[in-house]
Image (cartoon, rainbow, N blue to C red; front, top):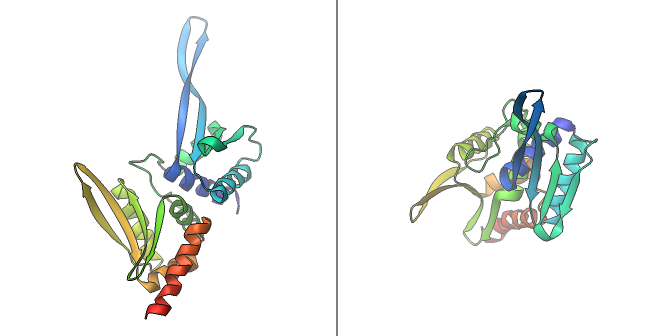
Length: 210
């Protein structure tokens, strides 16, 4: 992967399981005083070692001169400081929980990279008899619609459901049926070992039950 591919992968990781924080720096020059955004911190949280390593490798390729990258195992957190990386990620698109978005003006291969990474973190793979699917749950309906459109362009049929619980509303994008799971598995490369294995098992189970 080139640097932009890695940046797109990092964007998906942070949009699903991370955050970007900025710290204001006070600066005084003579009689003038101003506040400038100078420091930024990018944090990624995940308990899976495969994804942690994949994230760190992507960061090193995207920012080879980065000096501060710290993995805090007890908190399942990767912490790094880089204003250049933070700005690069935000230029690709919002990463906040309510407003994350799929980067625009990227090619099909890069869309597959982003989708695979996002599903690695936020996706669920279900494999039960007569109930096999891939699901992404989110409160961000617009973001799910963007994913849905990209999946449709890959000829992967999907559907978005509204989930109401007490006073809260969230949404679930589901990919189901054998042909769609097969197409997803062929086009989208998952790194999460358990989810990847579960998806293959779900596809194979159709043959045993048809």
